[in-house]
Amino acid sequence: MVGDDHLHIDEDDQIANTLVKSMRAATEGVIKIDIKDQSAVQINLNNNSIMVDLLQPEFFRISEELGFFDKLKTAKEFSQKLTDNGLTMSFLRKGKEAISLGKDAKPTLSRLLTRSDDIQIDSIKELANLKRDLEEE
Image (cartoon, rainbow, N blue to C red):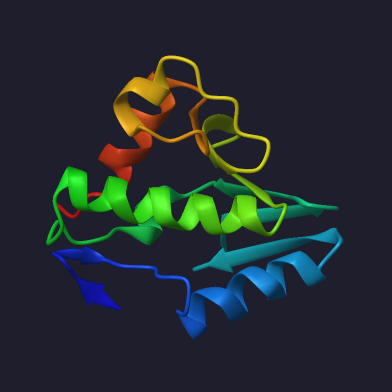
C-alpha cells in the first residue's frame, strides 16, 4: 500500500506476506524469462537464497515518482520481512552482484547509508549502473 510517500510494507500486508511465503516454499530451481526473444531475467532458487539476475534491466524500467529515501524505506521494510522469514534475495546486473537483502546480508559501510542490518551493497558501481538502467528515459 502507498502511505507516507512510499510503497509501505507493514506486518499485515497480505500481498507481501503471500509473496514472501511463496518464495520460501520454492526450494530449488531456475526461472528464465525471455522478452522479445531475449533473455530478460534469470531467477535462481537454492534453499533460502534467491538470486535475481537482470540480464536486460532496461525491460524493467520504473518511474521516478518516489524519491531515493522513499525507496530506501520500502527496501528496509521488504528486507526485514525477508530476514523474518529466513530468506535472502540478491539482485545482479548482467551477472554481477549489486545488492543483497535479507537474512544473509552482511552490511559494512552500507549500514551507514541504509541504517539496516538487512541490506548489503555488494558493488556500488553495479548498483549505480542498475539504478541507471532501471530509470525511465
